[in-house]
Image: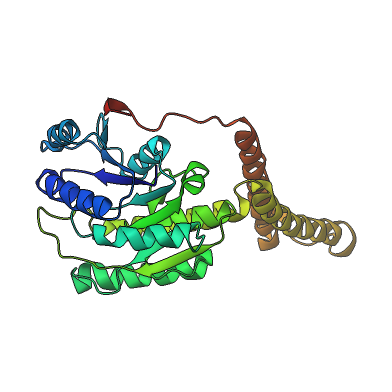
Amino acid sequence: MDISVVIPLLNEQESLTELHNWIVKVMQSNSFSYEILFIDDGSTDGSWETIQQLSQEDEFVKGIRFLRNFGKSQALHAGFAAAKGTVVITMDADLQDNPEEIPELYQMIIAENYDLVSGWKKKRYDSVVAKNLPSKLFNAAARKTSGVKLNDFNCGLKAYKSQVIKNIDVHGEMHRYIPVLAKNAGYNKIGEKIVLHQARKYGTTKFGMNRFINGFLDLVTIWFMSRFGRRPMHFFGLIGTIVFFVGLCFSLYLGIDKLFIETEGRMIAQRPEFYIALTAMLLGTQFFLAGFLGEIILTSKRNKERYKISDQIKV
C-alpha cells in the first residue's frame, strides 16, 4: 500500500464528507493505493456516524473511536499503530490542510528519501494576535532548543516513512514535537515543504491560547528527556553532588573555625554559614535521591494503556 492518511478529529462532522471526497479525488488521479484512517477522539456531534457511513460507501475508509477525548497525541498514536502504508500522511480534519499537497509530500519521502517532511503554513488565515504571533515565538523557541530547523512544528500536515512512525512514541501532548522525537530516535533527514493553508470552513478551533503555554512546558520536557531521559542520575546526581559538596565545605569551615580558631566565639547555630551548610546538604541529598529514584523508575517502567477504544471499523 502506498499511502495511509491518518486524520485525528474532534467534532468535525460537517467537514468529513467533503474532506473524504477531496482525498479520494487526489488518490485516484495519482493512482495511489491508499487507506484513510479517521481517529475519532471522543466526538459528541455525530462524527462517528459519518465515519461509519463513509466506511460503508468506501472500502478504503477505516475508523477508530475513543471512549472519550484523550487528546491529539493519543489519536495519532492509535492511527500510527494501525497504519499499513509505506508513507503515512497526517492531516487535520477541519479542511485547513489541503489534500492536493499529498503527491508532492509522497514524492519527497520516496524519491528524495526523507524520513519525515513537515508542512509549513507560510501564509496563514488565522488571527494574528491569537495564533500567528504566538506560533512564531513558539517555533523560534522550539528551533533553538531542539536543534531541528523547522519553521512550523505544529502544522498537522506531515509525511513520514512507515518505519519512523512505528519507532517513535507519541504521548502526552507531544504531537507538536514529532520531528524532535524522530530526530532523537535517529531519523535525521527531516525536510520541510511550504503548503497551502485555508481558512476554516466549518465549526470553530478546538485549541486556545493555553496550547502555547502547554507547548512551551512540553518543550522543556522534551529537551530534558532527549538529554537525560535515559540517565536522570547524570543530571540530578551531578547537581546534588555539587550542592552537597558546597554544604560540606561550609560545615568543615565551621567545624575547623570552632575547634581551632575561635573556640570562645559565638555558637555555630548562630552563624549564617551554618544554615547555608544545612540547606545545601539537604538539597544536595534530595537531588541525588531524585536521580536515584529516576533510575529505578526507568529500569522498571512498563508500557501502560493510554486510551480506551470503544469501536473500530476494518482495523
